[in-house]
View (cartoon, rainbow, N blue to C red):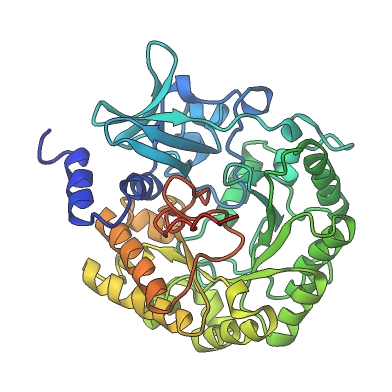
Length: 441
């Protein structure tokens, strides 16, 4: 293997960081840099046997739809599972982020069996999610369940993007790594169905279909989310807009799913309304820890709320939900984005760990999404390669260590922890935590 190959880099990191599961090393590399798909590995959209990528909120691609070639017409699978191969990988669920120029490629061999190839070598078998029965049924108005209530994390999570755009709009307000508004525009331009504000009754109808056909009860949680609301949508503020969906779901399906909401860090009274509506887990995302980078990357959030107030509200929300049920997300990797980010992995890890220690010392366990540098965003344009893989591997190490320092265990609503068990697909934080101890009967 040439010393300049991607394989050599990956193997070097596995050797240097033996406490990070090797599965997580590959998973982070696929999430940060994307994967190419041979036509043999694409789905037949909603008419096929494979569950296709639903574009549930962001594009999570390294190209715009017109740049993806056949992958824009025949969608790739929503997720892939890696197993076996020369590294003897345990079952690893990875969210699909398409990059036609990635060194990783999913293709079928001469027997039609899918595999993941790196530098031309087959490094694992690839499993794809079967088309769930509930995707084969439509709402009365003809809309697909995949459009209204797609599932991710191998069917564990129903993802309800109630509001497809964000009111932080334009260069002076949009978060610099986020393509929610562009993703909305590109789906509209491609003539794809992409509902702006989801009707509460449509959501309930889609959930009826899921509940009817998900007889194994694989779907365990739902997330309510969408763009930030700085004024009103349909006459409602953010807490009431998103909260009304939870209220309707909990009235119709009491206790069927764990209810989660991803929203801004709101004042305590608003947070209480979420709780009163039936939400169980609150994700007031803090995006990036460093004070300067928060101002540069989240100008709308800085202007409307401000970093210090944002953090204060996160801590206050623990009084409402309990610290364990407040799980703010950050976008792992933007700390190293040019032109403002840290230039060394050491500095980036130190900064991010400071943030982890701040929240975990209060019993709040953040989680993270691995940054995908989407090309229509300012940070994606300036940093098409994303952050170095070493940053992501060392973050997993620092994250687990910080949790252990504060005696915390994996957060609720994410499925099982541990390599070979985890289903959370947009970062490896669950893969790299210890597996639950088997319960003695």
